[in-house]
Length: 124
Image (tube, rainbow, N blue to C red):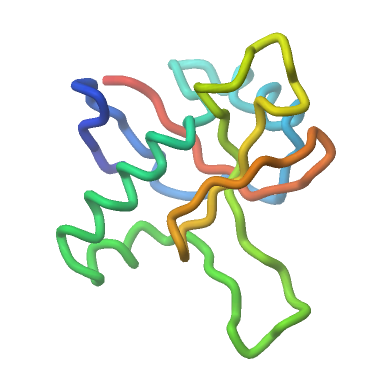
């Protein structure tokens, strides 16, 4: 596990992705079953984790093991990670999910049915 400072809080990033892909409801259910404070990260946390890891060097960033798309496979999977959007209205589930891509460091609005990879975080 790796620690990152985001908005004055220490965020612990789980060492590996969870197995498979998840919709929003599946991801939330999975994280709640794990307990110990594991949860979906928000898009700002993932942006800061990416930035801090890259500041330590590309080798440190690659050690985190995030999946990337194969540039030679234009029809292959686009590897995005499920996260929440803190700025979205909690009462509007259609816009509360964001898919974050570690290749470009951008969060994208996504639907409840979209399936994404999952890497959980918790506060120290």
